Length: 402
Ligand SMILES: *Cc1c(COP(=O)(O)O)cnc(C)c1O
Image (tube, rainbow, N blue to C red):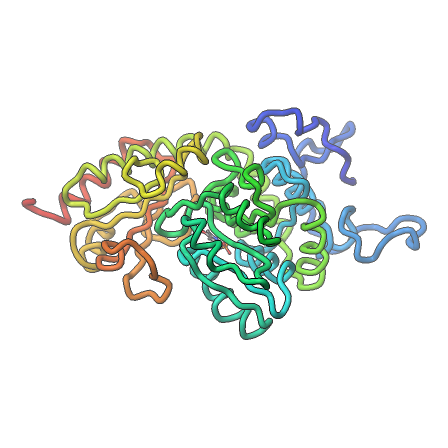
């Protein structure tokens, strides 16, 4: 069994059809019509092995270079993101490392978002400076002029999240792409909060996109994965250097799970966004809630950029805090019955996690979140009314007699 061109040409298909068909191995009579899990390290060599490249990555050879499930998933993700090429890795953090490891060299400088995934901060503030001699400046990437002011002659990369984890601050990607390109730098966007269906940063001028596949794209909370996507000439070195030679490869089983989970991505995103909008409005209208940030609310500081960039849905993560200190946030969370207290996001089930005001990466958060702590609610695909009832009952229990 080998990879043939897709039976259907995904380039001519709509989003839901791509989510179903892209990346599947075309079948000849008698083949399974779904790509099976191929748990093999090595693939049979051709008659004349001198014709192959030992570091080749486009036909199955050795699973650290190119396995069947990895190749299919890469093809599918590239199709969904409208990217020329994609490389998949073991986790979202492996994808971030691969991006930085490949695009940056000793002496280079990065301008990065000052609000972002916690491992991003550790990578850029501690590990890359110490181990690779790369430096970073952290700025508010919702302000393109602040980004431009931080650029130095040695700035090679601007890195942001389209919607920032955990505060939901929104970056204007088209404006940042202009800044980057005016200064000969690349723009990379972690689009984990806004998978294809909600946003495609490449279409607004981003050069590279990163996803934690662990989140919405898999969507079922049962596998980790990461991806880097972009133009072929930028992805080829990510694959050769960070995947084949550093080796943070995805397992065939996880690639298969993510391939299967992603089939329903467009369907799931519609329910995620509708639920998140309803919950955000419910929370904002309640006097027991101190602050709500959700990019679909008119009160969001970047509401205008959010509605322009994400017309199909402004994500499904809500940052909020109830009135009171961290211990009241705790009480509220423990009063929830349907919504699960756990880290991660983008799962089918709603998840809530507390970010304590004492955590070292809590910088430049809105004042209320700095004082109270922040609750990050990843709204799932349950029934809207059940989620609204759970939040309402937990508020009543947390503020008895209020
Ligand atoms: C979860 C997350 C990551 C890291 O992904 P893993 O798959 O857990 O390694 C990176 N960026 C963002 C925005 C995330 O939410």
